[in-house]
Amino acid sequence: MAKTLFDKLWTDHEVAVLEDNVSLLYIDRIFLHERTGSIALESLASDDRVVRNPEKVFCTMDHIVDTHTGRTDETLVPGGKQFIQSTRAASKAAGIKLFDITDPWQGIAHVISPELGIVQPGCTLICPDSHTCSQGALGALAWGVGSSEAEHAMATNTLVVKRPNTMRVNFTGKLPSGLTAKDLILHLISKYGAAGGSGCAIEFAGEVVENLSIEARLTLCNMAVEFSAFTGLIAPDQKTIEYLQGKQYAPTGDKWLEANKYWATLSTDAGAVFDKEITIICDDLSPVVTWGTSPQHACGVTDNVPSIPFTVDANEKASYARAYQYMDLHAEQLVESLSIDAAFIGSCTNSRISDLREAAGILKGRKVAEGVNAICVPGSKEVKRMAEKEGLDKIFIDAGFEWREPGCSMCFFAGGENFGFRKRVISSTNRNFEGRQGPETRSHLASPITVAASAITGKITDPRKFL
Image (tube, rainbow, N blue to C red; front, side):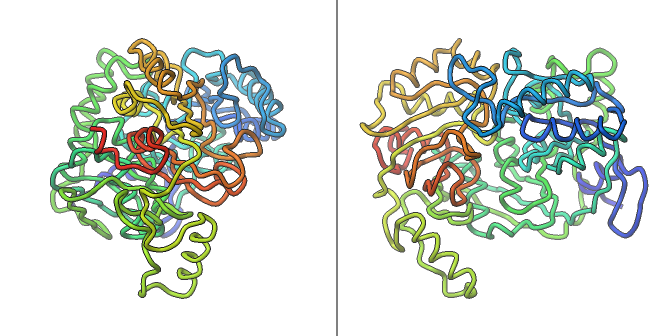
């Protein structure tokens, strides 16, 4: 029987079928971070259990750690120092690899795992973070879990998982100038709703996806969770192999050749059936920006804020009304008329070297508008090193951006640093929920080039004007 990529990954890791659509899966890699890592590790130790395969477990400091130059264990997040130090001690006791604040490979989990070759095609990878689905871009089955599930997996290398349905999203045609993977995923969510992929493992396919770089594919899969998907994944190809070759944790020698043979089998068979399929024709798409308080509240950057659709139910109408009020805007207002207080480039969605190169291309020789608080946070120390070697840091700084140390930073507000009360921010992050980036902060999601263009003009701006 013809199988989907997801079917193959699931079958290869199925230890036992427990009941209908529920299986015990083998877990190849586990990634932790300081916000929840110490909790899982300390709970495991308190139960007198050990990490079964410490060499398969990794941890990084990314969520709570400060991103200012000269940072230490001190952080603005309440109790943050304790989280950091507890994670450090627990990681050492468990014998797992920790990418600590001073480690040369420290960074955001979903950035450093691919760049180090920790995630590989055909493996299962979990992390107590919903955006773990990013790593499906390399042909892995990767998803977010809770701390207790991470604890169970560390002790047994297995996890009980309910099998999701399957969906294929085909992006066809040609990607127009000025469009990025971020625009593709925002368009998908805006068209089919934030619950459009509910309960599904989504394979992204089509010629547009095939032509994307690995880093752009990571962006695409990153926001599958904002579509309510179990995970997102993309079949590995020659680009994937070239990306992984020589990376620190990638196989070598005969194991590399063996891995390549296995990876070549990881694609959806002709005739395989998905529970649902969606096709997006990309030829006439324009850059996308969110206007409301959900990723589905999005439209073209040159469009007007949408009116409440006649087809939605009472709850959705109330959601629109609340979003208008929270964001301090109204239906039919021109999106490009919205002035911004801040611009942010960073997060596990858009903080890789390709993102910074593209944004720097817009910023070079230009200045951030007066009154705009502009911040760039590279996704990892390796990204930061590469950017500085290429002189991108100078472009950002000369334009008026702060140049920070790696971390999640102001992607989410956890009681620490924020953009300020009711400030309007254009952001390359993944969530625009109420209070996501500060107390009643109004966040607009967009691609890094749209953020850069908007920082220059001081209002939400079509990046194609600067290309």
